[in-house]
Image (cartoon, rainbow, N blue to C red):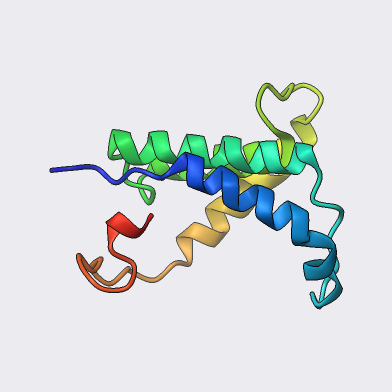
Length: 123
């Protein structure tokens, strides 16, 4: 079975476009955000790269390993590559139980569609 893959080059281009237009986007948000800096863009791209690797490996995101990967994905978005767990230990310790609570309350998913507007070739 062919694995899903993300178009990382396109995602990088889109993130740069969002960054360029973010001041205007931020004015219409109900909850204003910090600037979309180069660091934020790099962190987000690192998270997409990690997600692409997860998809390539065929990891079930709702397995124990998958939930751990989602937690790591969250850390990449917020902290970036190469973060020091010692420095961010409190953040990591507080976030881990939240993922357990959130994921234990999820209802079962409907089967994924194999065609339609979000077919894998669109990603």
